[in-house]
Length: 352
Ligand SMILES: [Fe+2]
Picture: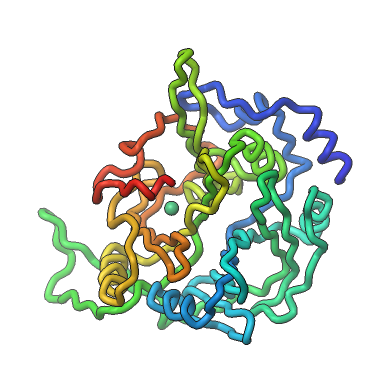
């Protein structure tokens, strides 16, 4: 399979997005020579991995951000949300370093297939991690790690942890009668990891790696107009293709940059009140905000970005769009105005 993958990589042309409008996913696949049979099949994103110099400090921050410690050793901490994942954030002790997102794959064979990618690790059994399982770390052409996991036992959700759905009263429809909304200040409890994204230098090379080797499919491209009248794609929001099943608008994104670095990772919380209570909580604790609260255009999420204590960007989001195989790929012009429909002005360092 390794030889097959490598040969296919060499035989098909680079991914070139020429549409700059909406495009059917099948047509995009055919145009770019995407071979579904050779792909490593992602099921969902599960957790982020970061190396931190001070585990106590990041532990305090992530607690205030809405995560719960599942397990802790001298050199590792696993944090969970209230969803099905055993953990959504894995912090390892060491100099500040991005260790990649971790995706569940369909089968053990997918892990074996991943070990054949250039720069891949062997399959490692997760002996200490909650829920166990097996993990392979691969590296994209710019050196960013990406982890693939299989065999983790699902966590049992705790019913008491699940937030209640608010009943809203609208102008002409007021279903909440003789009931009062009361809220408790505190962290915005994290449900799950939603997405992460990278700033890359070789956009087309990176696209090739992620879209050919894995069942990641573009939801939206952003482009710039070149002086010669052509359009050049500079950013992508990609989802995991699960056929007819609906998935988040993007699980992974990349944008062109002068340097290669992780941009942010993002965690889902329950609703707007939860998010605003969480924003207030982080403010009162003295953490440094980045941008928010606002409403994105592509993906539609209400966002709230923060710096963690090691200056990694991290986001709370709610109310994102979902897509499936019938959703056409969108092409939109890049620019600050494409980022949010409302919210504070985009700080200049957000896109750096
Ligand atoms: Fe985000």
